[in-house]
Amino acid sequence: MKSQILLQALGPVTNNILKMLETALPKRFISSSFALASSLELPFNAFDSSRKQYVSPEIISFIHESCNDARYQKILGICDVNAYSGRLNFVFGEAQFRGRIAAIYLARLREEMDDPFDERIFLQRVVTEAVHEIGHLFGLQHCSSSSCVMYFSNSLGDTDKKGSDFCSACKTKIIRA
Ligand SMILES: [Zn+2]
Ligand SMILES: [Zn+2]
Image (cartoon, rainbow, N blue to C red; front, side, top):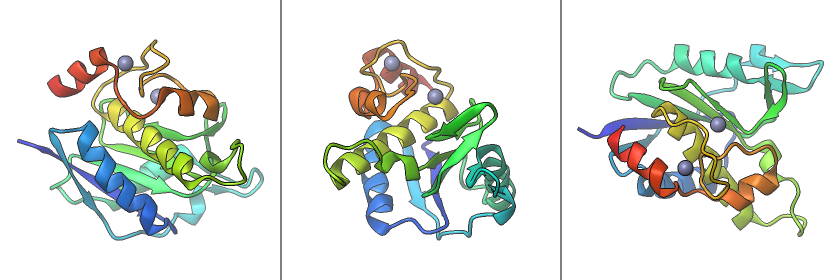
């Protein structure tokens, strides 16, 4: 049976971002189907006003508490904000390893472009981060191949370089998961 994955926007996320994910993700996770939920408000208590960033684990807990629809085995939160987690100054995304909830944070994905803003590069980064976090939900760990989506990216340069596809070893693991 296909696993059902819910795409849950929190706060304002433009439609072209959501449509891009809805189109791109089923190509990487062929044994899953994806549905788009109507958007929820971002939880204001997850905002750290001293850092002007959201606290990623708080967002993950909020999604866990708010999305109880038993039809969905996994949920990807999509938040167009800047977030951090633990000792990390910022995160592009975070996932419960082999768990149910992941989230991606888009605000920083607009940075470090040669042009002022290239939407194609931005959307590609969004897909890459989404595939990476869903990969963790399915139990994939970080991959040592710098051209695999499961490579740990420390910078947008890494994200752009690795792209949104699994290496052959990780692809096999995803099919078995
Ligand atoms: Zn990771
Ligand atoms: Zn890999």
